Image (cartoon, rainbow, N blue to C red; front, top):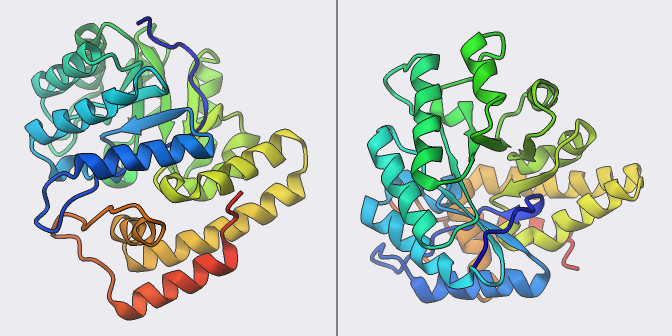
Amino acid sequence: MARRTTFGGVIPATITPFTADERINAGAMQKLMDWNMAQGVEGFFIGGSSAECFLLTPEERKQTFEIAAEMKDRAFLAAHVGAISTRQAEDYARCAAHLGFDAVAATPPFYYGFKSADIYAYYEAIAQAAGMPVLIYNFPGNTNRPFDLDDPVTQKLFQSDFILGVKHTNQVVYQLERIKRLNPRLKMMNGFDETMVAALALGADGAIGSTFNFMYPHYKKICDLFLDHRFEDALAAQVRANDIMAALCAVGLIPAIKYVLSTMGIDAGVARRPFRMPDDAQKAMLDRVIAENLIRE
């Protein structure tokens, strides 16, 4: 099957459902993806932060790719293959390509304070291993590896043919516009759900988000309202989404998403330790905020 080339729109960053003993629940992951597609989802971002990627073993990361690959004839699939080691990232990239994924993405390597030339070589190697361009996963709040757009090597990276675009998980939405200006060819995907309207206004081609696992109709509504030039309505829907986000983050984003999915019939299970699942008071708060704010269709 030829890889899809269309990339954009509202794409869930799929979680990794676990059983009570923290083993991957393949059936629940497939059920979640089927449920999302029934809502209108056309693409998935697999193995990212929402999937607890850096809490998984290498074998488990590949297992999530294998589970998602069952959907390759029905949806656009992007695999996050980022790692500290280029060799490990290349291995994940080859796995995703072999399984028929349409795109790969990667966080920059973190922890060691790599130079911009190291980062450039890392992304180039991933693209070669995958046989396709790479989506840069720009998440400086977690990686502590911001991109300096004044650096010539970084500029060369974003202008390179082996870069597909950027998952811009950065509260500095201004930088999204600056990257797009540096290379208008890039697909710019907003990564913080709470800034969707702002990102669309600055030229984003779509969004990849964790809360889209259970809020896809809500965020699709925001996107449609914005594209229909109903900006006040889009902002009002964004405010309601942000009220939900505030509640999720107060609990812990990933454990809260898993709890909410469980209330909707998806057995998302526990979050992997050291994450802790919400207590009864937190569950009651989440139930209330979601009932008050969620757009379901």
